[in-house]
Amino acid sequence: MHATSPFIPPEDATGATLTVDLAAVVENWRQLDKRTGPKCNTGAAVKADAYGLGADQVGPALMRAGCQTFYVADVGEGVRLRAALGGGPNANPRIVVFGGPLPGTEKLYLDHMLVPVINSLEQADRWRTFVGAGAVLHETVLHVDTGMNRLGFSSADFATLMADPDRTVGLFPLFLMTHLVSAERAGDDINTLQRDRFASHFGRFKVRFPDGGGSIANSAGIFLGPEFHLEYARPGSALYGVNPTPTAANPMIQTIRLLGRVLQVRTVPEDGFVGYGGTAPVAAGTRLATVGVGYADGYPRTLSNSAKAVIAGHTVPVVGIVSMDLIVLDISTIPESEAREGAMAELIGPALPVDDVATAAGTIGYEILTGLGRRYHRRYLRA
Ligand SMILES: *Cc1c(COP(=O)(O)O)cnc(C)c1O
Image 1 (cartoon, rainbow, N blue to C red):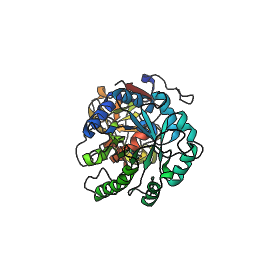
Image 2 (image 1 turned 120 degrees about the vertical axis):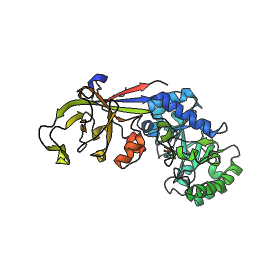
Image 3 (image 1 turned 90 degrees about the horizontal axis):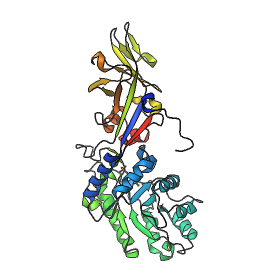
Image 4 (image 1 turned 90 degrees about the vertical axis):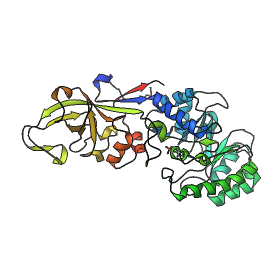
């Protein structure tokens, strides 16, 4: 428990329950690991607290399933994950930090056995100085940009690095990586363009580091085919149930279920409106259920008047504006006995996949997951 953790009452006393199915996460990882084949080290991106599901639970579950490489965004996430995963010097599993070592953080990488991704000449030079030009044996990962224009060496800077052996002393790169712009659109020419650009950088890299691997694929990249798999794959979202092939059926299984509690049921006494701003007209006799989940719980306000919920197998609409702590459902179509005070409504889950909720909210599954709230009860189903 973190010192800052809020008090969470028992499950039957919270407005909502989030169930995280660790067995489903593990099953998704196994599916991806199988798809990439035996020569590829399939890792897991567990940045942003494992996309909101909880890195302290997801990390160890995947490690027990055989995952050996974890990816986080910054050094703080890396330090916390190392505590959750354990491990001695030269520890497996590896924890790779995408963001690059900021000045002054280098020692944290050594102390917690974190692998820094080196994204620029400046970072390479600083790291080399820090490790005493090879006096300390500590792996890194090199990142070359092939079109994203976000992180990674430019082509010119990477050529500069590869041309000067003195400049790579002490880097001990485990692999060279790049990141795809548009992997979930299989037909987009940028994918093959990035792959070809990477291949030319990788050729130069292999001359200098014959044992070094290559890495291109995130979740969707894995589905672009074997030429994108190389030695290391870095899936994140697909592990958690987001569809890596949005134009086809989702090959992944859902991993979370958010249930909101019905706090009150009412029958509208006269024609009127629901909620702030009076955006949703309701006729006299309409039956409404008020549920204890709102935008403060990561249920986006953009779902106002557009989301669905499932109560006792019935799909019903969210009516009115999503408020901070509450939403309202129109339950007129449900028999009274099935939607009483205390009943639970599924808001995200097998019946309402995260991608569908995201589409209704005008966003992507990634943002729904990473925004999941901290106020309600969380239950982990063991792998
Ligand atoms: C987040 C991230 C991943 C994982 O991406 P998904 O689309 O969630 O699979 C892989 N590589 C890098 C560099 C990332 O930032």
